Picture 1 (tube, rainbow, N blue to C red):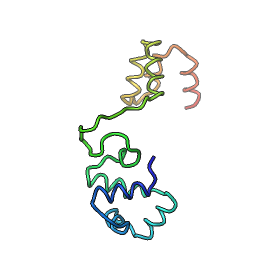
Picture 2: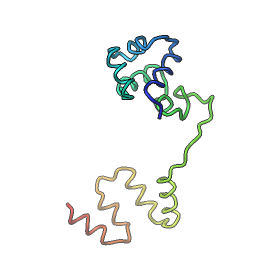
Picture 3: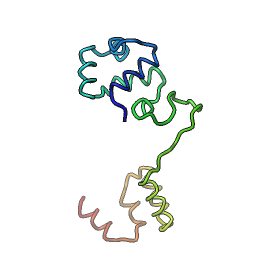
Picture 4: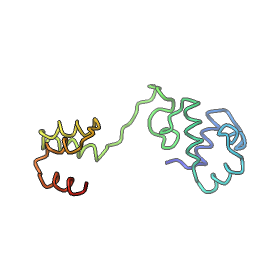
Length: 133
């Protein structure tokens, strides 16, 4: 994660600005607030999101230097980092292929979670859910 000081420098570079006061104007915050946030390394997320949306800049890139700078820009190759939780889910589905339909139901936001859980082999899980409600 970049520091707020680094983010300010990136905004200056992107918008061809020289001073932090100009960044405060761009972010639509008082200079004093920007200076305090910079010294505390406290990010004004709402203002950064608004800036990124207005300038079509990826918030992910601005905060972490991952992905493309511009939204929709394919000029840089995106280097995905391994997602251990997703890998674990895939492994579980490989080991339990019958749960694919259950997972799909859950992901699609089934209103009645009991219906989705009926596909599980563990009746204890269903009983625990009924006791909790």
